[in-house]
Amino acid sequence: MVQVNGNYLKLKAGYLFPEIGRRVKAFSEANPTAPIIRLGIGDVTEPLPEACRTAMKGAIDEMGTREGFHGYGPEQGYPWLREAIAKTDFQTRGCEVSAEEIFVSDGSKCDSSNILDILGEGNRIAVTDPVYPVYVDSNVMAGRTGDADDAGQYGGLTYLPITASNGFTAPLPEGKVDLIYLCFPNNPTGAVATKAQLKQWVDYALANDALILFDAAYEAFIQDPELPHSIYEIEGARQCAIEFRSFSKNAGFTGTRCALTVVPKGLMGTAANGEKVELWALWNRRQCTKFNGVSYIVQRGAEAVYSIAGQAQVKSLVSFYMENAAIIRQELTAAGLIVYGGEQAPYVWIQTPEGLDSWGFFDHLLGNAHVVGTPGSGFGAAGEGYFRLSAFNSRANVEEAMRRIRSL
Ligand SMILES: *Cc1c(COP(=O)(O)O)cnc(C)c1O
Picture 1: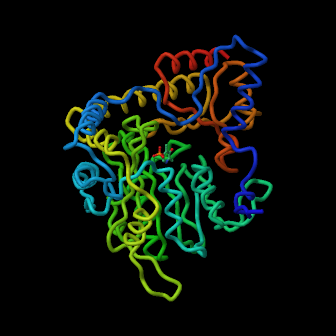
Picture 2: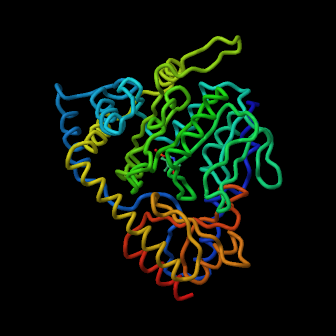
Picture 3: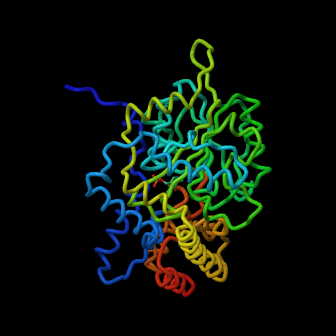
């Protein structure tokens, strides 16, 4: 019989979202008329920007002509999209990132997992706790961890707790690590990093020959003009960081699929024999071998994000969700809860009330307000005692959910 990848068997059973689904299903079977509002999963709800739709329709019509037909495109993405990204997302913010360093893909979730293909087995890996589960599970699947313990933490990983007591900024590891996952603005805590905080990480990485994997999926939600959107706003980051970005949350592309990864030229890793190897060349090779590019139609839709109309439409989408976040913060605070995040990110991170742990608060909200959120403990042991509500919903649903929570 064929052998399976035993690393998959190390994955902790009862993963967060299936368990939420199970509890919601059981509740709605017992209470079929209860109107449930879901503020749980991090998916967008509002329609695609018009500029993107128009561009994609035009691209479909082009594809219907002999002259405008496109077959396989470049594995790295079309140059016109990579140019628009480099210029608008990076160069105008003072970051030295060229089009050639941008790899267009079908998702940051895939890229942040696939990047392990080009990294060695022996790296010491640091993740925050709580954490976006993809970073951890992809390492488990690739055999880069030991087994999970009773608390659900995997052997071999260095967990950096982010809690109220350290202001939700990851503390630097005490020892030396080689690979660090950072996500700012953060999912799930909604926290954000200042330039000074990111500089500490860049300095650590340069001093320890470490690589930072920086997930900036929520950069568009930053409101404070002083805060960095990209790790490349920090001097030295080109020598120690790869950045992931996505059109999923800013432009509502969760179902359309387009993202990008920046791998700076000259960013080096080490081979077993001590020789220095350029990561750009390895990632380029990986993508050319295992990936055939993003649909021409979708790339035209993503390009439209950078048009004048597209920029305005994305800005208004982001403002809409951030107004939801402000309503959630305000109403929960008025309800006597302690809340964090939701000011530079579409997630509000709630301290669960006295006497209720994360799942206890989940059951309380589901049972009494018919509101579904996400237990903080599902993102890691240090998430216990916290709860995530997402601002991705209609205004009517957010207002109704808050009205119910306040009347508890
Ligand atoms: C939503 C999200 C992404 C985006 O993933 P895609 O695959 O591009 O849709 C990346 N990182 C985090 C932390 C996210 O929450």
